[in-house]
Length: 343
Image 1 (cartoon, rainbow, N blue to C red):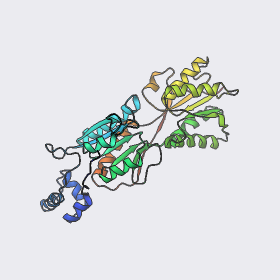
Image 2: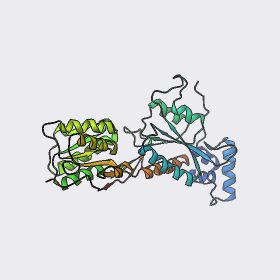
Image 3: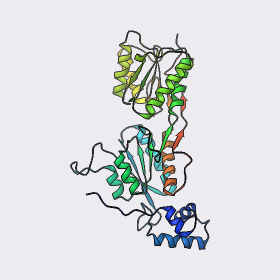
Image 4: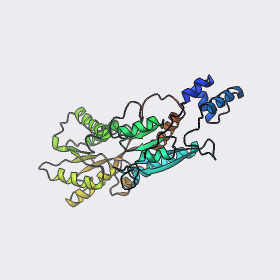
């Protein structure tokens, strides 16, 4: 049964009652010492009047908050890196983090499983960071009603205007990766990207196409393939490219996991990297350095993404105004041994 929740007073309401600014209320809640005793007393009185209790604070640990990091899976280097960066930022801010996995299709009536929103609300979490998760409209509505702020890392589609997201410069990273291959004399460059409806897959595809167009190189439809960001789909899509009558000389593969699958597919066809085919990946996961030859790839600052998402969430929790609904961190091309000049 879904719990009926009493609307939680906002910082704006507290500030209005106390006759101060929202930032002053935030300072009092965070124990800042740059507030006068008289002002602090007014804010404390308003907090008591509205029966305000900071979301996520333990009754035995005043001021300690907890937030949720909800991801679609915990396997692999991507979620581990993001979670590590978020946890480090949370530790620095004195915030507890609960990490959980969102099970697709889970509901309160699904053999005892719970929707991740149910778990967040039951824990009285102060806020939520979502990693590679598409929240449903009803889930967003329930979080808004409970006044639980959220930040989305790498949203799969354009989020609503009131939902803050954190990501990287996907278009610029793809443009730089493709230009790197063009500068080495490659012209028949294939793209293996993610599902066409994913926001960051579209951005990487657009960056690739823009670089090719800037070099005056036409992109035949058969050179653009869509995978699912895992090794198996990399194997499948690269095999399909090299089964064609006119295969590419270089590959821009929009995930390191798919790129490693590309290595496997090329080895099975007797082709060498980079002597026969050059490859550029995307992510710069630890695996990119482990394969032979080491993978040239676009580095996403995954730990920084996690830390930025947590710090952005804390600003929302404190009632701060954000300059933009989108936080973008810069990507960097890391050149290793998987690319070479076209002979």
